[in-house]
Image 1 (tube, rainbow, N blue to C red):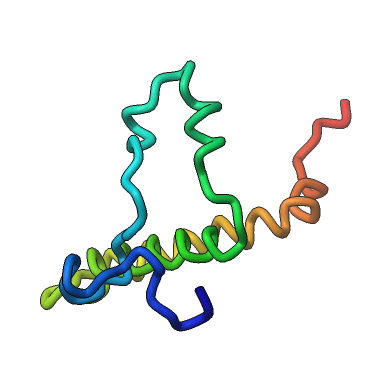
Image 2 (cartoon, rainbow, N blue to C red; image 1 turned 60 degrees about the vertical axis):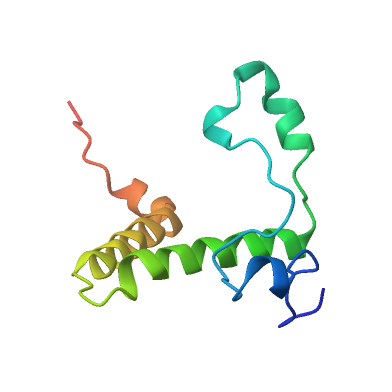
Length: 107
């Protein structure tokens, strides 16, 4: 699978129009239904190739887009989600600098 190609599992005659937010591979047990003893085997079945990870991020992005950004009457939720994500990201990358400014009692 190259960049910009359809997934190998996608068949237009079976699946209809292509949806970038859908996984066309073999379905597996959803993470919410996995028991604690099965987590190791569930993680071992995951495809850990960089293109598979990029595909998972791409599907998550498109699901977010379809749910919050692209509806006909999209609200202000995606703006607040992006702002909150940016605040958390910049807090994490600046934590070392911010932690030096703690208030201590010197007595």
